[in-house]
Image (tube, rainbow over all chains, first blue to last red; front, side):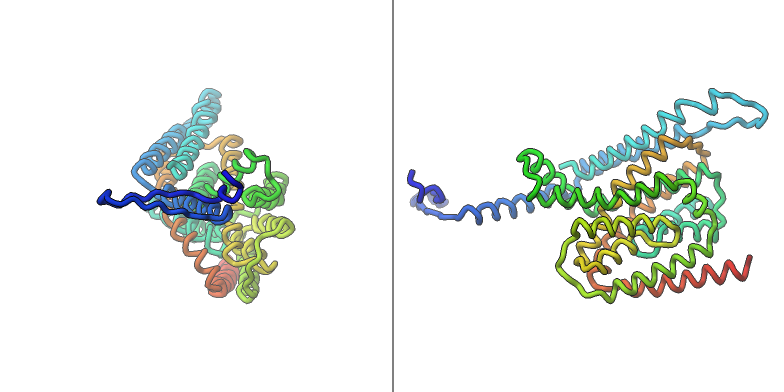
Length: 116
Length: 272
């Protein structure tokens, strides 16, 4: 193929009756094809970014996870101010598990927003 | 029931004021004061963290296409090792630059700043009037087609750091500064909202991991309701704010800030 023909594309169009076959040569410059690709990819991405049932499902799971995190924060204090119980005050459930669950829920919601 | 209504009102106020240029922290403080919101420091803190997380999610939802494009551009820059001409890479770098002043102030002066968020009604009033002046000037600025440059990003970042003070609107300060620097109004709004998302998420992670939060059953309900209210209102307010900036309607918010600021100062002076 010569250098001149590199930018040319042959497109075969078959009509519905299958009686005639047209061969059309389409010449496109490199820049216009790139622009078209960019436009179509933007259009695709816009379509893909629309919220669907999958998004809401994952967002729901994220909300549930965050809710669980908040539930894990319940308690953590002694009713009697004269009693010092370290296992209640420095509870791993409140200090570690609860924040991790809340952040995991938030991350899951961000994942849901971008899920195609 | 009263606690639930308080949570809904606080959620709506946070959702609206995080995006509208009228200071979310200032309005939250005023609302807590006038609603008689009583909570332990831990409960109040987790409420604030949750409401901010909700508005960060609102921003991500509204700008999801922009964010997706930025990340796709970044991956393409890494893949092709072409950083100089990659718009997404440059934009991300400007976002990181703009975050530095606020992160610096937040980390170094955290304790001093916390003391300013304790029923400082007169301070809130004065800062609201200052925000009003900035919005008034920004509204009169001529529109241009310029994008945010690297020096602009640093100056806008400094404006964001100053806006940590209660009563100064973060969006108002950053959009106003950006517009006064000659940047296009829509681009200023987009930059302002995107620059704060990593900062809010980082602050949330830091607060959750550093502090010990204890919840009661009542505050659990309040936090959940507040989150939903702030998320929904945030999506509406963010979309609305982009139109407001584009249509040069910031002056109305300037008048509002003047009125609220004067009201807060007069109220505190007369009734204290």
